[in-house]
Image 1 (cartoon, one colour):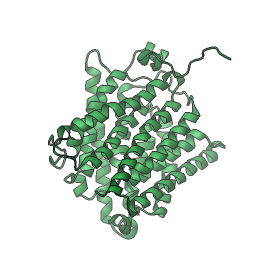
Image 2 (cartoon, rainbow, N blue to C red):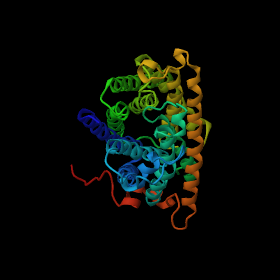
Image 3 (cartoon, rainbow, N blue to C red):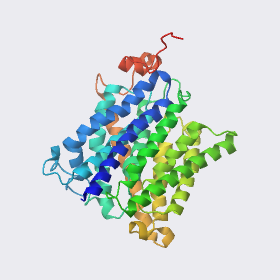
Image 4 (cartoon, rainbow, N blue to C red):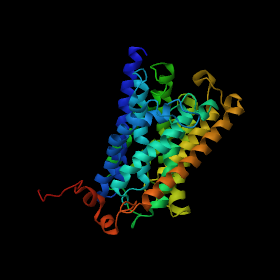
Length: 397
């Protein structure tokens, strides 16, 4: 790889890593003040735990030769040379943020020690196989020509569906109706995510070239369109535009453009962003608040699951052959939609079933379990799990 491309990929990798602290602030601001340290620690510890899992065996399972469904242990400990270091580093950042996304569904009541073990198991048994399907040279979905430039299925649908399984098993919070305790944290987190997403999408071609430029531009376009659309829908329905809503809309647009960013032009990105702003708004408003009793606390499924599904399918619609080498439905290629639908369906089924089994086993282990005690939940997980508070009133004027 040329030095310029290496420099770009190191920059892109750092941008993607920054997304996880951004997620920490985004989620932390949405929770109650007594749980913000715990919520932030979920993301911070994902950096620590997944980084080690990735270099020890995670990358090998995801990108080792293996077979069409899973890699092998040929690259365990990253033995065998340094020619893949750029891909190893860049892909590690994706592996870090994906399980951190799930935590938005289980905040304020999940055992922190159990979460650490869950990270190891989930990255190894859920993330790595799906990553292999979609991005490894012999992955069965890649061979089918399923289009996922930067992680619509691997990251967002995967995390969104896992969030449903986690929320089902851990159960509802004692008081699930709380509002965001720190809106500036939410906006700051969304801004950091938006900034880091340029590395997420524009870096996924592994080169500083025209396709990276296109991915950068369409990423910003979709995010802006979705944020504005979410705000306008809020105004039509509630006669106000909330900062949390606009920030969430931006994330929905970023999620939806992720699989499409290497395949669509600005017009396609604009439509994808508007669609994500509308669809994810009503998913958050209806699915978790009116249609079900599921306590997906921070609407992970509505934003990442639904947004990822929307983006994956619309990638097949708006793909431009001159940009990504594959014509979409808009250019008359109907065959592209079959692999997109199969990729979405396979990710949904495997992620839900595998995540459910992992969490169920953890819940049945004596002395472990998924949920904190009622007393700890009432006290707040900052104190009960970490012995710290996010905000301390020292009585000073």
